[in-house]
Length: 130
Image (cartoon, rainbow, N blue to C red):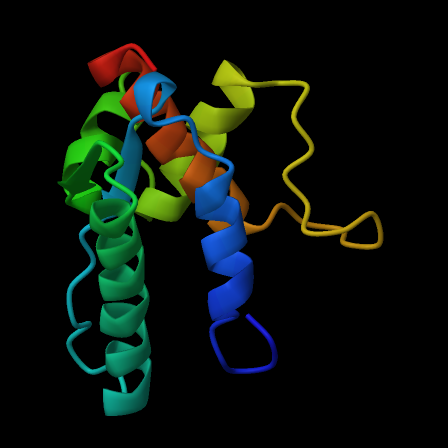
């Protein structure tokens, strides 16, 4: 993101680094959030669509995965907690104890976008072997 806008060239540049024969993309199949603002829901949908279009345009193997599907695999062995975010954080800390989950060195707390992405990557590795 650049401010509140998607960095389209930056996203494209990332996609150009992928080896079609040695990758499988997982794109979270997010849906509108009940009670969420129309602007936030539009941004979610736009981001998902951008990733899917780039995957198709660059002929990259990909799967759209609902959050509950990847969370079910990642949360195995984690005690029930108040939120899925808490369960994902605990699971990722157990699976990848040496990974720094902060957004920057100045950050004090793990960033949920980072540990969710690592959870989806783990799902991909366990499901597709990549």
